[in-house]
Length: 60
Image (cartoon, rainbow, N blue to C red; front, side, top):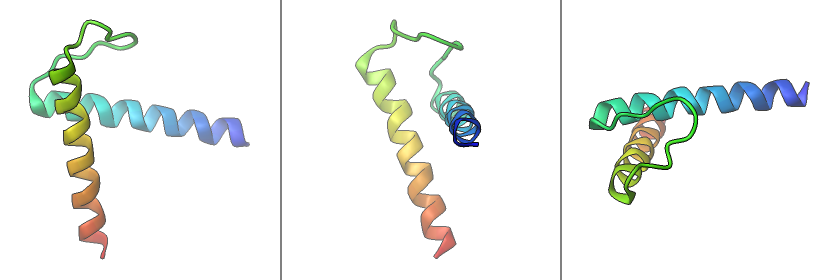
């Protein structure tokens, strides 16, 4: 059961990452994205954190 939950979590995070990348205009491809610049990766991560914080605030 634990492995199944972990796989579902990974898949959900991958979808979240792709959605966030799309929102900030960074083209991601499935799998390795080693060609991203630090700026592009930071924009994606920043967008993800921003959305998580907003989600947390709306739940309060």
